[in-house]
Image 1 (tube, helix red, strand yellow):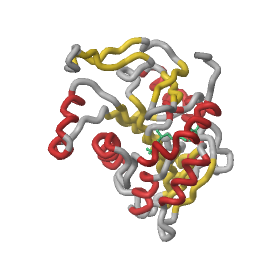
Image 2: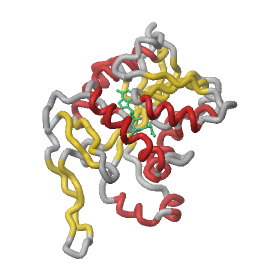
Image 3: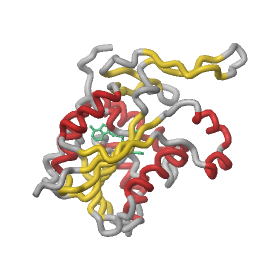
Length: 255
Ligand SMILES: C[S@@+](CC[C@H](N)C(=O)[O-])C[C@H]1O[C@@H](n2cnc3c(N)ncnc32)[C@H](O)[C@@H]1O
């Protein structure tokens, strides 16, 4: 596929897919978010009461609502108008969330040093200019502020990866190919829509967060907890390879 296809085309597809995507989300998000991502993000971010928090790429807004229900002062940005419309519909009037339309690659309507914490849950693999997002998140954070983001694990989810199965459907191995390819690829989600994803190596991710100025404070490759395994036993297979990786970054304190 053409390598110059970028964020604008990706967002057109998000607009078309927004209803179907949101239908799979409850107030805990979808199943993968409930099992892997929410426990990880919540453990990394700590208490958010009275903190200024940006949800960068909020989608239908379930995590913005979790933040606002924890008494954070929440701004939520998404580049898909349709996603924002759904997020607003799903937000009770007494829950104050400042929803804004914008591209995380350039949020010039938001002021420098204006957030204590930025969360970006499963967004950065969906946009073209990830280096710009890291620079932009750095600009928006106060000194010492945290940027926590989750993405598809780039070592295991690549433009060509998936289970190798027997004829009877038994899962033998998770295969990975095209790891060193960097750029756009298509992935079918749901029945019809082919979404755009942007692959980079783990090295590129780490080097670009460091280049933006961040201190890497932690990494988590989430696994299902005992509690989640009891609730959803089929996630046992997720001990075989990792679907997600979560970064915890900190903006340096300038003296
Ligand atoms: C996989 S969804 C995740 C949504 C939400 N964070 C969640 O966890 O449910 C990715 C979201 O990122 C948004 N998005 C993609 N590229 C973006 C960009 N450049 N700026 C802002 N939002 C973007 C999409 O519109 C979509 O809502």
